[in-house]
Length: 202
View 1 (spheres, one colour):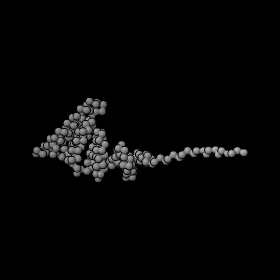
View 2: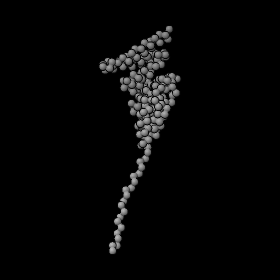
View 3: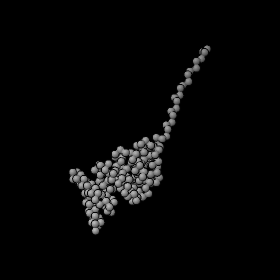
């Protein structure tokens, strides 16, 4: 009976939090911010009081998304890492959580950490949007001045996902990187006209 009651309370909290999160009026920023704060508080309450219920399994992910919307990237990263540690067996959602963690790290300026999270998502077999991940990794490698790594990511994207909406831009970036990699041909020395031959004159 207690387990049943806990599950009901958890479901109610999750429902209220999600409704507040989704129903943020665009034309009323103060109300939207208030809804977001209340949603975050409810997700945290769900995790603190009913973490053993099935409903709580998705709560760290939802909490991370809400915190990211509130521009609390440190809190978002903590929530995403909490999910990764607790539910590594859910491979499909795990890939998405790793992507969100990568973006949060990037906003915080942790480029190396972002690359690590994107790479983990890419290597997870059930991750969706791998074409987008390859594109993001290519851009990150360029930002780290690793043209060879960027080129490898872009080429893998265009080869493995030719119909991806990111394939066209990857092809453009590939061509640009390949052009930069070609050493410029040395300039030919200017031809010096021969000096006039002085004659003895007769």
